[in-house]
Image 1 (cartoon, one colour):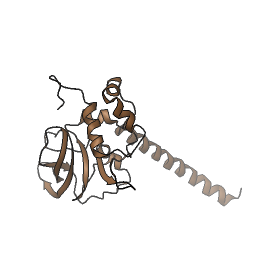
Image 2: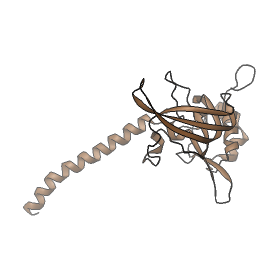
Image 3: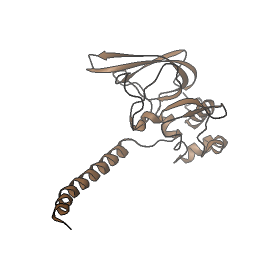
Image 4: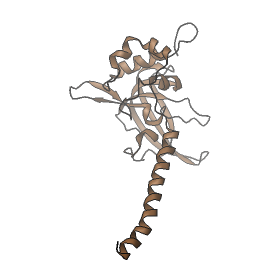
Length: 209
């Protein structure tokens, strides 16, 4: 090997190893922070579950938090948890003008646009009145139309983990509906809400909240 080539290799190899190491650490860190969730996880952690249309998005600086906060208003069409009716406005950390096409939508707080139809699984409000979809992009299901014009609800994972790792109790509660949609990504919004309602443990008196 020529001296010049050996010199280049001597300096380039450590940099290449460092770059690969940083990529690996970054990937492991992200994987440890964001856990892939199934329908049981989403429904169990959610305080409110509903389908609706985004009708307003605005941003405001919150001096108490020292950060920008986005206010998003939805017109609710159906709710299966949380007693949501009519219109609901949620507060989320971050600006409304943030780029919605992030390279890692699963690990980012989802953004909304006016006119967008969604099914949402929302965390309980924090003490500062902030919330976000459960599991970030996993708890926001965009309602879109497939090639046949049918409405389907898709989250940031393409629904691929909805039925993975369900508990025995959840399997029994979902029964036939789980078999109807397992392995499929084309779950209609109403079917998704039915699954979310069916997988929840009933409270005393037999009603789910």
